[in-house]
Image 1 (cartoon, rainbow, N blue to C red):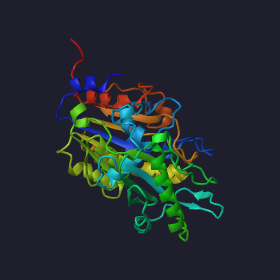
Image 2: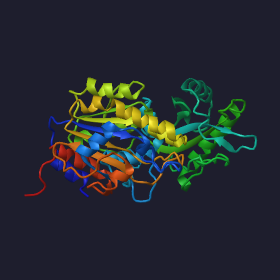
Image 3: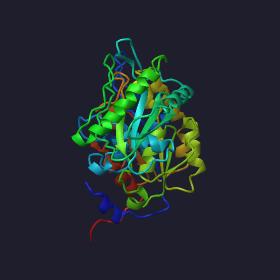
Length: 404
C-alpha cells in the first residue's frame, strides 16, 4: 500500500467533487426467517442503480477477522492506517471535540454511558434505555459537582445516554482499562492501570466512580456510569487538506463523528437532525468544498438495539433521499460503512462491509444491486478500507502519475 507521504506528493487540488456516504454499521447478517440481511431486505432502487453504474466490493476497515470500533473504522475510510500508533485515537477525545469542548494539552478525555444496574450491582442495560438528551443534561449537571484529588473534573452531555468526562491536571495518563465490560449481567469494572505510571490516574478515576455511584443511587434507570475510550489530547494526525489536497467538510448529526472529522481537519457543517437535513446541507455548501463526508448513525444504533426492522427502514430512508446527492452530479460518490453491526449480534462485528464507487472513469463490473452478497462478486473483491481515498482521488482525477 502507498504511504501518506507518497500520496502527499501525488495529490492535486482540482475542482472535481467527491462524496463519501458512510452508513454506520451497514453490514448485517441474514434474518433467520428470510435468509436476507437488513440491506438485502430493504427497498433500495437508487442504491442499486449506483451499484449497477459503478464498481463494487467488500472492504475491511482494520484487518481480516478484527471487529472495528467506530474511530479506527472511520480513520481507515479517511485514508489513515488505524493500526499505526499515531492514529490510535481514544474515543473520549473524539466525543469531547464533537461537542465543542475546549480541550487543553494534557487533558484526559473519556467517553461515558449512563447505565442501569440491579440491586446486586450487575448491569441490566448498558445504555439506560437510551434516555432523552434532556435527562442526560440534568444528570451531567449533578455529576459535575463531584470533586476528586489531583484533577479538575468536567462532565458534559453528548446525546441520549452518552456523556464526556474530562480530567484536567498534571501528569495524567491514558493507559487505563475501560470500566465497561460490554455485556449484561456483569458488574461495572474498576479503572485499572495498564502500566505502573498510570496508577495515580486510575485512582482518580475510581474516586470519581465511587462518587458517581452514590450520586446516582436514587436515579432510575440511570443509576451508574460506564467509562471507556480513555485518551489524552492532542492526537497527532496530519490533516486531509495537507495530505490529500482536499477541502473537506463533514455532515454528521452525532457528536463523536464530528470530533473525528475535526481530528483529520474537516470543516464541520450544521447537519440538522435528519437524513433529509444532512443531504440538504451538502447541496447548500456544495460549491465551497470538494470532499463531503456524510455520516448516517441510524443503521448502527438500530443494529446495536437488535432492531432488524428499524435498520431496514433507515436504509430505505437513505435510498429515498439519495437523489438529492446524485442530482448534484458529483465526480465520485462512495457508499460504504465503517463496520458491520448485525441486528442478530446487537453489536459491531468483523464482517467486511459492502462498498460501491461510482464515477465517469470507473470500470463497471457485473454487480446489479447494492448488498453484501452482490458486492462479494464485485471487481474490487475484498480490499482494505485505507485504499478507498486513493481510489476516490484517482477517479476524481486528483492524483498525478507515480514515477517517470
